[in-house]
Every structure is written in structure tokens, then in C-alpha cells.
Image 1 (cartoon, one colour):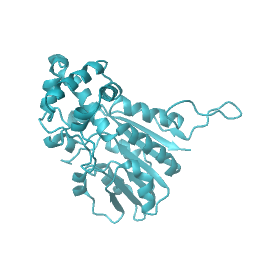
Image 2 (cartoon, one colour):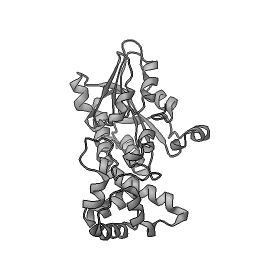
Image 3 (spheres, rainbow, N blue to C red):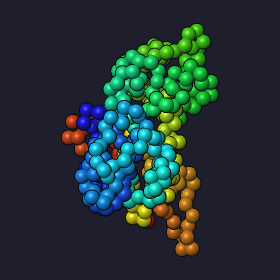
Image 4 (tube, one colour):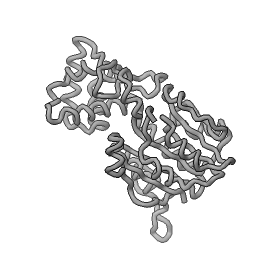
Amino acid sequence: MEYHNPVLLKETVDGLNIKPDGVYVDVTFGGGGHSAEILRRLGSEGRLFAFDQDEDALANALQDERFTLIHENFRFIKRFLRFHNVKAVDGILADLGVSSHQFDVPERGFSTRFDAELDMRMSQRNDLSAYKVVNEYDDANLRRVFYDYGELKNAPALSRTIIEARALSPIQTTEELKDVLARFLPERVKNKILAQIYQAIRIEVNQEMDVLKEFLEQSLEILNPEGRLSVISYHSLEDRLVKRFIKNGMFEGEPERDFFGNFSVPFKTIGKLIIPTAEEIKINNRARSAKLRIAEKK
């Protein structure tokens, strides 16, 4: 599990309520930890499809005739399952966020610990990079990124500072970006603010909120009745979307009421919010912000 230590492994797979002959999807394959556990519980007639857009994850493909790894972003889940003649599934697992591997490879530019080129792409096939966001976005868009995705109240000042600095010379590396924004990084909260800045840029580069919305909507379409959705999120923006969609089947507004005044919603929430134990966090510190929500399609 050097590539990625799976978070809430038992709880997430338990949430799928796996049928031995069912069809399941792991949309965030990574190191294959969750997928391996799903396969362990499937019978000979079961099938598992996994998605990962990161080229590095392909080396972890599991050698099992019941398993298919699809090298694509999971925003295309419906399209590529249909390519494999699958129109409906019994469960979908998503472990959102950045894998341990992506954080630990310096040149990917995800981690605040290393100096690297401004990249942050989860797929090297994507055209948009952190470099383009930092050096080419106008003031309005930079403000939007920092405010919406980093929840940074000083987004206007961050944007102005970046635009002034890049007018003199392009900002090419993560250390150069830190230097440009140094006055916003007092030592006592430096790591917290940096994490918010990096998160904001990373979400924009990878269109993570749009991808999540598209994925959730398609999941509702392709899940069989009583099919399960098991989703781990790592920050409040993701968790709010997942929670609201599970509750209402939509991201904005309220669902329609029936003749008797009752809400008609597509999912039933299974259990309560699940978070890692202190023991798991001790073993895997990146699990500390994980939140697992499980739902069943009605």
C-alpha cells in the first residue's frame, strides 16, 4: 500500500452491502486498496470496474478476470460503463481527494512540503495546470478561485499580489508562489493558509466540484434500486455537495412534495456520518479529515 493507504477501508466497502454476483464501481482506484477488498467479497460471477485518470495508477491494476480498470476521469462514468455494456450497477465507491502518491511525488506540485513546478494536474493529459491558473487568470477569476475553493476572505488581496508579481516575472514554482504570498503567511498559521491556497488552485485545475456534481448525478441514473453509494470526502466543499445530494437528490433548491406534502427523494441515508478512529488517524494521518457518507437508491 505504498501508493495509497486506503481510508476507512472496511467501513466504506461494508457500506456497499456487496452481493457476490453484483456489479460494482470504484471510481477512485489509486493504489487499488478499496478495489482489492471489493473483489475479495465478490463471487466468481461478480464484476468490478474502476476508474483513474492518473497515469501512475495504471501500474497498480489488479490481475483478476472480474476486474476492469478504465483510464478516465470518473465524470465520464456512464459513458464508459456503457462502452463496456453496463447500464446499471449495484454499488459505487468514491474516495475523493488527492492520493498519498500524488502528495509524495514532489514534481506533481500537490504538496506544500516540496519545491516543484506549478502543476497540480491529476491527469497529465489535461491542458489546464496550476501554472496557467496563477499566471494567466485575470483578477476576477483568481478571486473566485481563492474565495470559492479556498474559502479565503482575503482573496482580493491574494489576487492583486499575484498579478503584480507576475507582471515582473512569471511565477513558475511552488516556492516562488510562497515567496510572492509570504506576507499572507504568518508562521503560526502558515501551513493552514498554504493548504487553503493549494486546495483552491488544485480544485480549479482539476474542476473537482464540477466533476463531483456530474458524477453524483450520473450515479443516481446508473444505480439499481437498493444500489449503494459510498463516498469519502476530505473538505467541507465536497462534503456539503455529497450531503445535500444524498438528502435531496439535487444541489440547489428543495425537492417537490407529493400529494400528502411529503418530500420525494431518490436516496435513503444509511447510518450516520462515519469518521476514522483515533487509531486509524495515528497510522494514516491523511485520514484525519475523512468523512464517509453512505446512501441507498430507493
